[in-house]
Length: 200
Image (cartoon, rainbow, N blue to C red; front, side, top):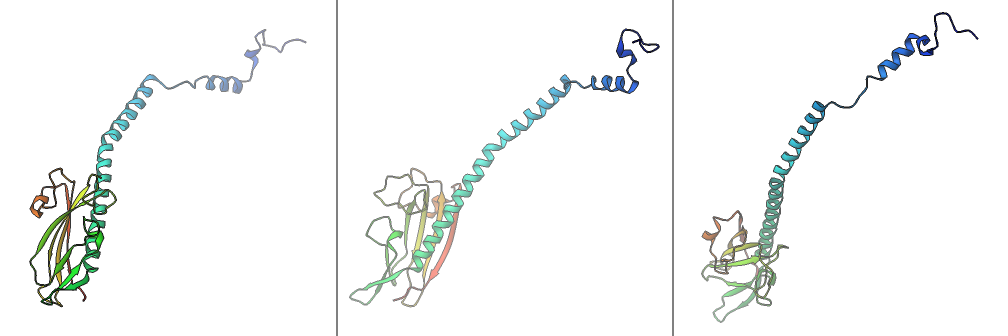
């Protein structure tokens, strides 16, 4: 068979123009240039550095939120304890004494008490990781401290007044005699006032 006029032995010269055009266009697609790759790596590195720099901030914020949540729970516990004060006994002079719940004490089986008309009492309790009061026999390191100042009723039918403050972090020098003034320099502090009339 004779070749078409104008066509030699190289058949691709006789291909339609649109076919040659598409082949030539597809050959123009290549990889990313060095400039593009360098720019992409620079952006990725910047994002990674930013994320790493913000990581400590996020961790500190999470820790602060946990401390605040624990402190709020402790203050709720203190409020519930004061409102749960129950009549204990009357002495020979007829003065009423009330007892706080046992869980609001650092001595197992020895609840804290207050009598009508007696002077104010202050004490500091240690708070564990779960937000409960640690006993004096516990070896778990405290996380926070709870300072309480309790003013008994002046007479029967009058309210007991309580100031409760939770501070963190616990410090090795803290003791049951730590006073409220020692809490001002702590990283965190939450407090509340409780007023309640105990029932006979």
